[in-house]
Amino acid sequence: MSDHPSRVLVLNSGSSSVKYQLFDMTDHSRLAAGLVERIGEKGARLTHTRADGERREVTDAPLPDHAAALKAAARELAADGYGLDDPGLAAIGHRVVHGGKRFTEPTVIDDAVIAEIERLVPVAPLHNPANLTGIRTALELNPRVPQVAVFDTAFHTTMPEHAARYALDIATADAHRVRRYGFHGTSHAYVSRRTAELLGKDVADVNVIVLHLGNGASASAVAGGRCVDTSMGLTPLEGLVMGTRSGDIDPAVIFHLSRVAGMSVDEIDDLLNKRSGLVGLCGDNDLREITRRMAEGDEAARLAFDIYTYRLKKYIGAYYAVLGRVDAIAFTAGVGENAANVRAAAVEGLVGFGVVVDEKLNTTPGGEPRFISPQYASVAVAVVPTDEELEIATQAFALVSP
Image (cartoon, rainbow, N blue to C red; front, side, top):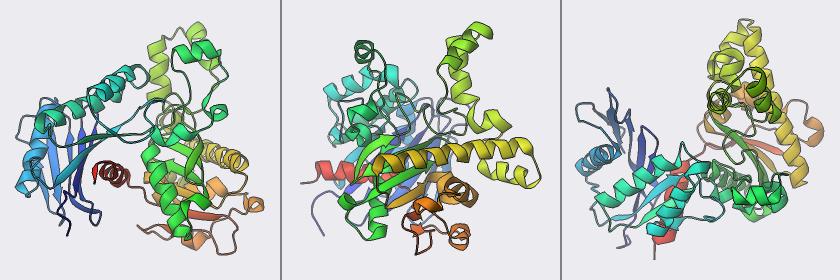
């Protein structure tokens, strides 16, 4: 066994939560995982899960802020023998949502990096401040261990300018950093690589359309391991229909709602991000509930499902054209991995493009990467469970290991 530190702690700090996972990078095993919820609120709790599956809940400790939350998580890790001062800890990897144009790869965090992440707050006001809080708190708890930022946007920085630019006045766009950045990059990177492995090919030889479908959803066109287009843009609002977000919409809708409905910018922002998408169309953002309602003949649920899967199909067709040759389409994340009816509807009618799913394979549950297309199909369709935390750990460890 190597004498070098081999463990990586991954932190994902949200506005009122912290998720963490500890990995041993010698075999990519999970040593512990946890979630701190409702930080600063009544009913805050920490749920810690050991490698053997044993769970502990902490509800009596005060968790007024992220510092208290991370200290509580550190105590639970120490109880398992993995304290933050353990010499076996090689790095702490942080998920950072927005890295702009500058951060194209994982980066060891210093004062200059923190300042740049802070400078990007205006383009990620809901995410970067929480990410920064996690970084600063972890640095206070252990300033000696390397801290690595892994950016959601980094994987998409390989997009060519004709894909990343909006057709706006170029001076205005540059002055205010308005361009398409894309998100869910760690998932798209992980899934595109795992899909190549599933095909038994080198990632450099594979073209993949990745469909990350959770409450937030995004598509990417990946050519030889490099992103050439993605559906999210300046913010995570653009692109696919999502749980509460509208996705693509005529920008003049905003002016119309302002002028005709008298809505403020903040009200329209709230509408498009929190009260649109599936929940706006039918009142539910859970595909399981929507499927149940469809089975009972609910027309609003059916329309929401049809709009959702129609947008998916449009992006599959668009990215097929962008790539020219497609080796595989990979579904991932909560909806992508579990909703067989979404997968079937998204590729229905695409047999002329070599895209088809086998009904039995598609409806058979499974937790491992698997094909759901018949052997004769010229484009493989796969379900590839994502692992964003492992991807962050892998990138962080590669950066700091000797």
